[in-house]
Length: 386
Image (tube, rainbow, N blue to C red; front, side, top):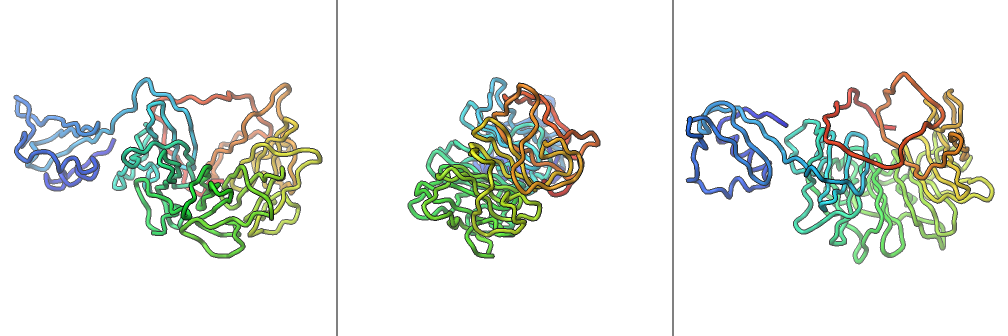
């Protein structure tokens, strides 16, 4: 909910922006001051948004409250993706919702002028007739695959991570410029770079190429998808974009990593950055079935039913029982509670400011996801996510 104080002309312009232009389509002669019988200003609802004047008629300076439409009370989320300052979800009604920070339009609700933090899910403004079937929330931007076969992105574009070749931020979904004839079947949004698997079997990357995390053996950023240089004969079947590195599972059963290796998050025991995929040194006889690239560490689920982690541990992220700050250059087994098997390896991007209570071993938790519309406090600290 946001408050705006302005003259009637500015108020009308604001309404036109927030309501997707529908305000301009309203007849000019209809209810000129929108007054109730008592002479008090009345609320208006357009496309679910409620504009409530609280002081004076519409032709004078006024205070108004803008209330976005609430999600349906019976809505269930079928897919969820957590970013750094915002979250995405696909609803059972077919719409995609977002909530959290909206500093650079990463909620995709076409309200770039609203810089507040949304604690209630708001509908992402997908292109007409398009439903999103896959979503991925990055640092301050979002990715989605549409029912029309195109891939869309919105939010920050400071490194070209939206893939639309413009370099400009967007508060609503814009089409990623995929190679001609290629559609993306899997996507992953990182800090400021994106990964996707194409219908041609190749893996593509775009955005920032710091530390070589695009995997194309060049030092250059790219505002459009470029092909990741996978090993000869290998196709990637699963991808994960982290803050400064990338992970992928290959068709040969090996796991590969590229980008920053300053904290050994590539898992190849070298400590050197790599601008092309390098094989992760997995435990003997183990293949990874699921992967997740975080800020400075990596996670994976093994074919032996165990969870592995490698990279940097400053607060117990590796789950190996060691609370001191340390690195692991090869995958080490996460110490799971007795009788517990993890079924997902997914990190939650967060601020570097952490709670004082720490644990180095996993705790019991639900494997299912739920959502409520309860108001949550906004982030209390700014900073890069790790």
